[in-house]
Image 1 (cartoon, each protein chain N blue to C red):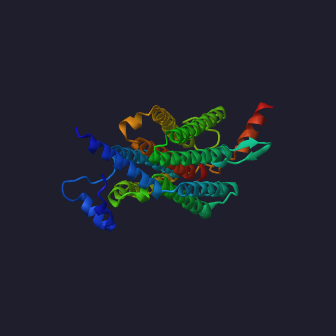
Image 2 (cartoon, each protein chain N blue to C red):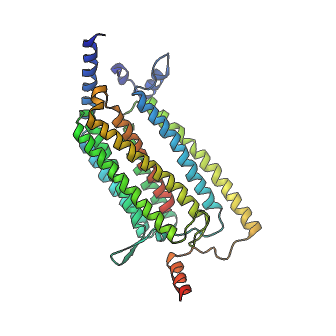
Image 3 (cartoon, rainbow over the protein chains, first blue to last red):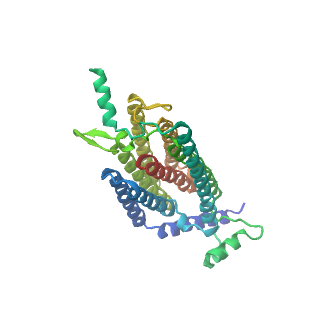
Length: 141
Length: 223
């Protein structure tokens, strides 16, 4: 076994790691971290200020995708990987869009048949938690 | 060893070069590649859960409960919507940040800092699981079951226990994994191997757990 070769490999590896560390200054992580905090607060605000309907769904999706994107790109280092690995990671999950499309069309059909055959139940109005608790309190007295 | 001559080509050419001839396609340590393959398979598992959730929520004729009210807590005499979940989200993001710092210090092989940040990450993860246990206890006490609940559609309970349970299991395993790796760092095991790749690999797993939570938070708790 040639020890000088081993030593050199070790050295090269340390140098590579040093180079990697230089590429990713600590500031990048701290900035992304703060950004994720801000984005999470925004998603929470969507609920806190009780946005409803299309505005709510759009805001939820936007903040979710931004957060997911930063986690994958920066924290999971994907933006610094080579294209072959990036495609191998990101391409397979895109087929999930087909699954979502198929299942939502199937779900609409199931819902339709349920309404047709079972009828829309009268209690289809969403239930507030406070009403449930008030009901329990009334039952106790 | 990275071939630096490859790095000057464009993205498309680099894919062609990496896949042509009999040679290594992915220029990363094998352990890291295996972790990525595992994470992609895990992506499909969680996607099946979330797509299944979409399906039951779209098909049920019963009203869906208000998650914002179900997960509200009374703090300082005020009823704050979804606050527990918001705190859990912030804890998980913070743990991702400390994990990213541990990975960064692994490039310098700074053992004390790696172990410090990994133990911080594990502690934050453990507190996340603790809050989840609290949340489960609270909901079970209010009568939420996998087959029924007082707030609306019975599917709410089954989706809640399955999705958050499976995610919580991932967090718990991650806490164990990170603690084991961190103690091996302190013992100097990776100095003897002259290889600190495992910190980055464990980091990938942890960030993935955070990533899954982003989707659960958006689709289950906020939608």
